[in-house]
Length: 343
Ligand code: PEP
Ligand code: MN
Image (tube, rainbow, N blue to C red):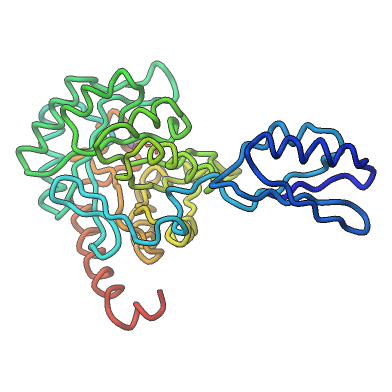
């Protein structure tokens, strides 16, 4: 951290800052300049909370040199993390993993039909929301624990591990009982109590990017989970809120190669919530693979026209099968020696 003083700052201001830095257990190193003084802060192991320094008299600016995340960063942990969900491995050195299924669990028949469709097309992990974070309270809120049971039943029937969202700490016991991968949705990316609680578990977590979160905030959210001891975290880009309304969100694909540079954690892409438009899902799914995603999460419903949630962005079984065939071809191409030299 670097503290830049005002050019009108007095010697006593500089002394106050040095004292505050020492009180934080750190070492102040003044760097006098012709116009103003800067004070380097040495000895920190990670991000420093600068609230007290920022408010001291004569302080103009506090510049962070180290990041608010350390455990998720590649500097700290150069080897890529591979997360296991059942027998499925997600991360470097493994083929991209497809998580697919309906937005919400709606019924026994719907869940089974959707599960069979995604299994038959070659998906590895079955999704289905039982606790749904809907924008309005009058929309379908999910089936709750009954939905978890139907998801588990469908997963067992087609022999696929299952992923589902947990919205609050009180749901964790139930969700862990029935799921293989815990999803923290975009709206809860900064629910720090929930992040800390899943951090205490020995259970893989899929952390979706908040719709207004910067990449730094996204990685800092993951840091909460790792800081409690759980490093089985998969990141998921699902689009961010921009001025554009033609698509539901704006897919920020550059986050994929950037996160791969910054962090050792695997990252997947959800083109369904990112676009909100069925016809855009396949091409953005393929683009995500080109960008280096370790996997995808795609909404698939056996009868999208009748879906209780997100039908407009859901693929049907046939479209999904076609997408899987195209992704397979693309993966083979990307995996070829020629493409590896570009990556
Ligand atoms: C979901 O995956 O069901 C979901 C609600 O997504 P998000 O949290 O990204 O909006
Ligand atoms: Mn959805």
